[in-house]
Length: 248
Image 1: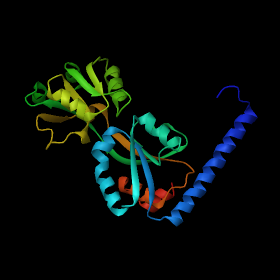
Image 2: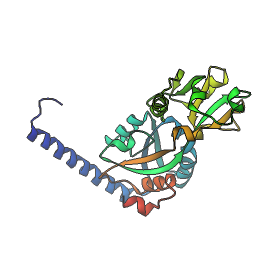
Image 3: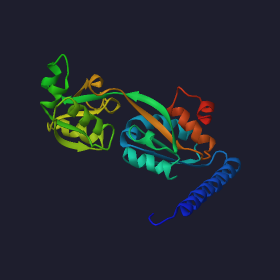
Image 4: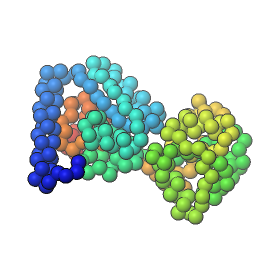
């Protein structure tokens, strides 16, 4: 907002804190009145929702059958904003999410990218995959706001290369579809390649070219969360106990 004086801004900040505390009181009341009922809203990217969350979601819904689960998909920045604004209880993403000061972030898992090509593609004969070799082919990858699309572009640029990006998408399934029809080669998250389903494609590891990425789960600082929210976070961060998560 424009035209707000410094005292006015301080009043708005205090009002926001008061409203957050009022919401926390309501949440505490819900916790004791309805221990096993409520709502869990998760903001995440397509890759997480499609490839990493199903197992945890299934386990959670079996354990808490009376909790309504909402999954909101968006790009990493949108995911972080939804948590920061209180529109989601937790956010799960790789980029941007650790850049917000009012978010607490916990590491979920590390992952690498892979190149997907059709069966019989010339790259399958290469013993040492390089950026220069990738740049020689039409490239299909994530939109620059999703799952490291910007990092892929920056990596090529830092190597003095300009890849021929013919298509970008927010969805790994879309990328694989266009690789399958021969439009180019794809760069996707390694977890998005499924050998039993992607039988027409072959995965080539390329983590050595683009580095290891860390997906994180974020929650808003100072917000009271229901017990089942911490249980779900613990399902995503096996290296941390539910008690350790509460102490963050």
